[in-house]
Length: 77
Length: 181
Image 1 (cartoon, rainbow over the protein chains, first blue to last red):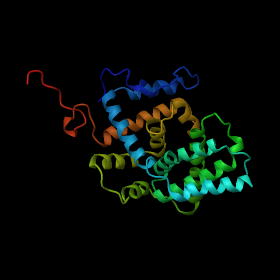
Image 2 (cartoon, chains in turn green, yellow):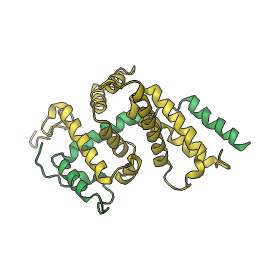
Image 3 (cartoon, rainbow over the protein chains, first blue to last red):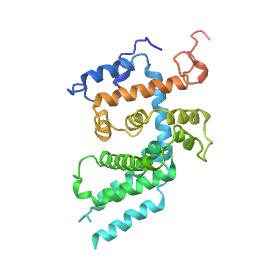
Image 4 (cartoon, rainbow over the protein chains, first blue to last red):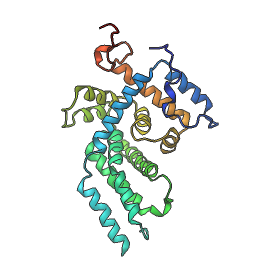
């Protein structure tokens, strides 16, 4: 999977490529991104989010909510 | 003890718990330990709220605390019990909820086998919604390093799962529409 026309594939989440010090690493990263199509990247992206969201969207456990309430009350005294 | 924690700020903390749990699970691969980590993170965050500037990135701040907590604990533990290779994957794949799409379980398995730094970068940028810059601050490394880790993680996943542009059998890429059919 090492050719393809996807120079733009890696742009998806890039913010500001002009940040100085890490230019070389940037170039290396770009080289590594070559060869992966946007479609494949998007597919992987969806899967990563699905795994993450599965936990993130669970109801928050009671004891964690209670912790904040307790801290809140002790803080106000 | 922080003075005057605004209820808005408290609500903001609560709103981040879900993401913190997901990040914690992705770090340690263990649900119970993940919740302990989140609890400790919330506790520390609460007691250091005065060092947080309201209006700046609360989520990144919390993720940083959680990550630091995890790694400093891990360093301590390593002295006691050496964490055998692959134990992370073993823990994650023995999770009770093994239902769901096979596709996703396979993916989860492959994700768990990534090197820690690559998995972390991919989760931060690809799932938790951080920019490369924010992820770099959380992980205390250069932006280019994060980019490189994310790319390596993607390539490795594609490799492990044998995802490939031409592989239509995976059901990832819909077969091309035939013009004349």
